[in-house]
Length: 307
DNA sequence: AGCGGTCAAGTTGAT
DNA sequence: ATCAACTTGACCGCT
Image (tube, protein in one colour):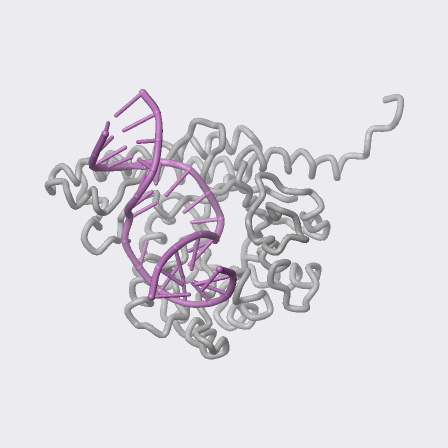
């Protein structure tokens, strides 16, 4: 069975996550700042529960949590420990409630931290900050029962082989609780599935196979074979990504995402696996629900004339 | 109340 | 040399 996942946001459903900026936080006196951060964090915990509830009620099996769920958590000036915020215990309790709900209703949760997490960087300070960011994600993951923190390979710095070696070494040095959640995803510019599979096997980190990226940046391995190889890196249900190009495949730039998924872009061979597939489409929950319907009609016999 | 410039961070490639 | 793109709009200060 395939479970489809929703990424971070809603198009029409009135569920919103709040954020703030470091510049604004810096203008507030410390006490007001802590109150404000607490307010936003609690709001986001409640929105997350609403998001998971929506997913469960609509047959959406997974939800990707935005990295800004605790805004500015690791910022050098504006950063904070949730425990130190006013009502910090309530905030943590609210996130743990999300975790309990997700587990009880089998809604899988994951994280996809942004481009600033670069374990392959030759710069020690960049790697150190990246690890700090991953630790933050692992902490929230433990509250909400997320089992994936997914990142890209990062830059190539003119020498992919060396960069991949740094990546593998940095993964090896991660705290166990972070590494056990970490996954690597092929991107559309630098690292193909073929590039990453070696690191995945070496480090025991699963490969999140993004078939859209693979089509933008092919490596000579077919989708079917890559699917098999990627699935084999997982010690739990594999997580893959799908999306459709905004202006079609013939356009110069097929990387931009469409509002919806063209069912033809969904690899038929995926239907043979037990998988989570995150739907990266701008129409968000509408796209997930439409694709879900379209996939279900693949399993059902087509209605016969006269029925 | 509405609008638009800005938002912490890394890296690449188009211009 | 600058800047958009990444996964993606939302926030905040000004009028």
